[in-house]
Length: 258
Ligand SMILES: C[S@@+](CC[C@H](N)C(=O)[O-])C[C@H]1O[C@@H](n2cnc3c(N)ncnc32)[C@H](O)[C@@H]1O
Image 1: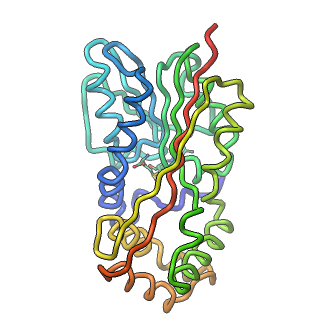
Image 2 (image 1 turned 120 degrees about the horizontal axis):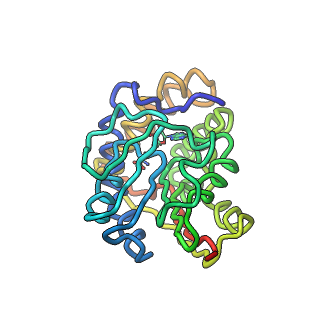
C-alpha cells in the first residue's frame, strides 16, 4: 500500500486538519442530521477521523447510552476525549472495524487517499447493522477543472497529474453511488457542493497550507514547477480573485433490513 500522502507528522498538518474541521464540519453535521439516525443510545463509526472533531460531536449526540468509535491510521493529532468516544488505530482496508453493529458509519475526505477504495467501502458497509446508514463525503475535482485564469487551471492540471501518479483519486466522488448500489445498499441518494471563495479567505488559506506542506513533493514529481506553485499562491493572496473549490460529493445509503 502506498504511504498516506499527508502524513500527520508533516509540519502544519494539525493546523490544516483544524482548518478542514472549520470548513467542512458544518456541512458534515448537516448531512448526518438529515439522516435522522443519530440519537441517544446509537452506535456510530467514523473512519479516517483526522483530529476527531466529528467523532467528538457524535459522542455528544449519542449520549447517554451510546458510543462513538473513531478510527484512523494515525491517532496522534486527535485533540478530543470523551467517556463514550472509543479511539482506535486501524486501517480500513484491513477489514471491517466490527461486523454489523453500527447505526451510522461515516468517512470524509478519506477514500480518495486509499489505493484499494473498493475494499475500504466494502468494509465500511460490512460494519453497518441491518437498516443502518452509511454517509460518505469525498472530493470530485470537476469544478476546479474549469478554474480561471488559465495559469490557475495549469496549476490544477499539474496537481491532478501528480495525484494520479501518487494514487490519489480526486474523481472518486462520482463513483461512490454505483459502488454502494453494487454492495446492495438501498435508498441511495447524493448531492455535491462546492464553495466559492476569494484570495485571503479561509478556503484560500486551506489551499495555501496544503500546497506549502506538499511543495517539495509536488515539484519533485516534475508535474509542477516553482513558478506554477508561486503563481497559484499569489492568486490565493489576492482578494480580487474569485474561484470555486473541489466539489464535495455526499452520498448516503441504508443497509437492507434483515
Ligand atoms: C484528508 S484527512 C481527513 C480527516 C477528516 N476526515 C477530515 O475530513 O477532516 C484523511 C484522514 O484519513 C486517514 N486515513 C487515510 N487512509 C486511511 C486508512 N486506510 N484507514 C484509516 N484511516 C485512513 C488519514 O490518516 C487522515 O487522518
